[in-house]
Length: 448
Image (cartoon, rainbow, N blue to C red; front, top):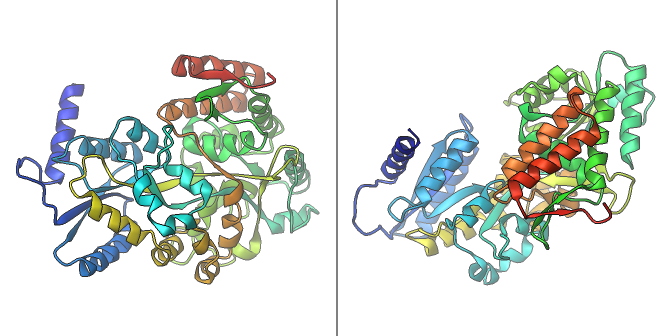
């Protein structure tokens, strides 16, 4: 059954690229594969304009845009099947930072260090963003096109009712919990604080919830120098204890609400706009929902909501913490026309194209010059704040094993949230399961 499925997907990939022919590849054409999100037109319009521009500047060259409309997992499967063979491989692919290291380890992508070292614009990319496309071998395989950051959104009107400052800037985890407790006591009928937790919300629990805590403790999930997953850290148990405090004190959504797979949409499109949630640990992109013509237009959002950086656990340096994801452009190892693909990447990654893309897609710039550009800063009232978090942000250790380990984080959070395990038991179970996943590639945290 599995063999038949794989064969069928290969056939689809071949057909999508005009496969079946054994003729030499057409070096006057570059094929660009990207993820099309339902009825969203941002990528289609941006890349369509870039195609026309590139073809005008390179007479005789055709840019073949190849969108794949699919869920994330299906997109990745189809992309990997295409990249396996020179007959079906695109010349340029859109890679999620969540998955790129798996494709690097599978030898699907080619390193870009020589091209990057000769490209002056690479110096404009932040050092943190550059790490999004870097593999364990130290080589860089992709160019990021934008990122995101995460922080605290809070309702100033609810804060005023609770007697809390409307210019709230918490310095420690204790400050966050204290504000939530005050809101619970003084403003009944609203959810004091939302932190995503549990398997139903998937990666949002791992990156927007748990890792926003863990990386504020000084501990990490993975030690890149040792190339091992870290177990037994105090920061891990402290992060689970924070989750435990939120749910045992009833400061967050009910467990049933938290286990709703649509919670992210409900938070952005219902709970925040309707004044039913006081504090939300969430992403930079959610204001996209409130802009005219989008899912939940809310003209007053910028006067009602404030933003604050998530503090480190005890206010220790650098005082703020954030997590980032994002997407990148990579050139497959089997690309027929890699040189022209690189030229296309350079064009769409220059300052002017990034300004345009980051504005229309509510992205956080990965270029420092774009982050300071007046056009970008004026496009959204929170752009400057969320961009200011890039120097303190962290990327997930998105190596090949990360998706499985992320799933175990979600299980640990859910068991604490629902009361099926205490913090110590949940942490111990996580350690045991990660040992089973990673084998010898684990280490005990220093001081544990």
